[in-house]
Structure formats: C-alpha cells, structure tokens
Length: 114
Image (tube, rainbow, N blue to C red; front, top):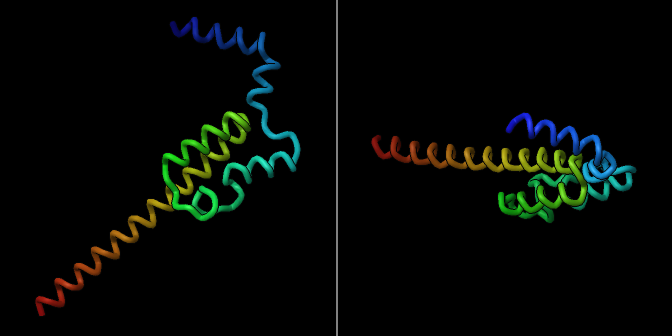
C-alpha cells in the first residue's frame, strides 16, 4: 500500500501541478499578505484571536481551517504558529496563577502555625 501511495502522490504532483500550485500558493503581494494575516488574527494580537477575546481551542481550530482553505499552506503555517504561541501564553498564565494560589495558601498555613 505504501508504494501505491507514493506512486499516486508522484502522479498527482506531475499531472496536476498547476492545480496543486494554485491551491497551496501563498499571498502574491505584500498587500494580499497583510490582508490575509489581518483576517486570521496574525497581525499582532497577543491572544491569537481577534478583538481581545480569550484564546480558545475551538475558535483556533476554526481560524486554522479557514486559513488553509482561503490562504493555502503558507498562511496555514503562519496561523498554526500564531495559535501555538497564544496557547503557550495562556498555559504559562494559568501556571502562574496556580503557583500564586499555592504560595498564598502556603503562607496562610505557615502563619497560622505561629
């Protein structure tokens, strides 16, 4: 089966090159690139989303799918990176809050022993 997969990918790549190139093409001008990045929340938002909303995986999935469908592989990769960064920021903030709560609980219990 693996050999069949390789042969079909090769055949498709050779015979449908123009279609494949069109599907996976990136933005062709700086204006098109900027518009695409802005559309998908890659324009500098800190949360990975738009309009200051809290980052959520369900919304990120929609942005990723839309980026691929409308902007091809290049925009898809940029949006994926942006979403991963936003998720990491959210996770770091969650951990910071957990540590702060644990520290506050620890200081209360040690002060009550005195």
